[in-house]
Length: 282
Ligand code: ADP
Image (cartoon, rainbow, N blue to C red; front, side, top):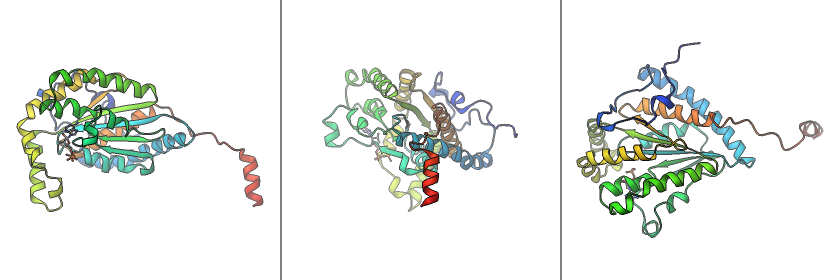
């Protein structure tokens, strides 16, 4: 068998514990020794493994199993969250996926507790839920832009830990991924959005305002990692300057999480020999 290009599993190479964002390298490929060519070659192969596991999860869900998986994606604009949805989640059967993107809260959402809109979009049994942004915005953008006072956002870290514990107790495996792009690479990607007619739609003038708040965002992200990286809902930190690596790494994290469920194909709810005989006679 060929030697693995991973020196350690993505789950250990990318685990958030101990990561200091002020000295973090968003262009790294932690744990992976291969290059872009190998990474791009591996993605569809690993995608097949992911897709088989997802089908088994879905099949179990159909048979009444409550277990599911929730992938939470966080990252600054241009970090590549959308690309992960298209290129990683896009490798599995869409009927088993529940996707939710969380933007600026609507008037109705604002009238409720910040977890209200989150609870409404959780995956059902057998599904993979994907959150493009999440309840973490309520301790990120909300904190950085002073949308509420410290007294309001400060208790949210504990509240989020409790909420996620409740979800895992009910059968959800949570995988939290924070994608980090460098300020330079973000500039390049935003520049592309201003050069290409197929990218204008992605450009938002407020993204430039957020660049000025970069250090505040880094601090807010650091607190998220320090205070909400738990055994039941771990954070993984994924360097995002190399899109091919981020996609491969997140595929590996999902494969690991689904493998951990030790799924088997559901047993038939009918008698096989009887059905074979009926089929032969039909
Ligand atoms: P994206 O920028 O990811 O393509 P959108 O433009 O629809 O998606 O919305 C994302 C914006 O919504 C981001 O600027 C994000 O910070 C903001 N946002 C998300 N959740 C909240 C929240 N709870 N309060 C305020 N702003 C939020």
